[in-house]
Image (cartoon, rainbow, N blue to C red; front, top):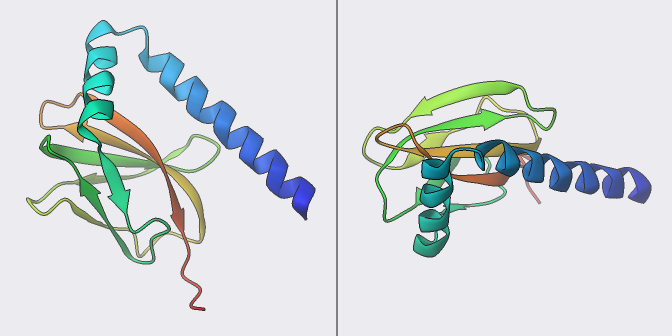
Amino acid sequence: MKIKLYILLIFLIGYEVAIAQSYSNDPQTEINMKRSAQTGISIYPNPAIDLFHVNSDIPVGKVEIFNIIGKKIKILENIDSNTFNVSDLRNGIYLVRIFNEHNKVLKVIRLGINKQHP
């Protein structure tokens, strides 16, 4: 079981690097990502159960959610609250790509979904 977990973690780290590299060809995206790192964009709670909130000084336009193999499974538009419903997603690890109002990528963050109650 531990070996599978380590393999999954290595895969996720490699996947995040690949996503970051795919955006590094666009100078404007690179500038936006550097700014987002400085402003401290984050999501909480993480892991989420039914909802997560994006904490950002920059207005969020939408988020896209990807499974661990890179398939886009959900696009959520922001309706003024920066809170997004993920109650239809199964337990697991997802990547959340956060966009500003001008459809520029601000940040990609790993999100866990855990609907099991302790």
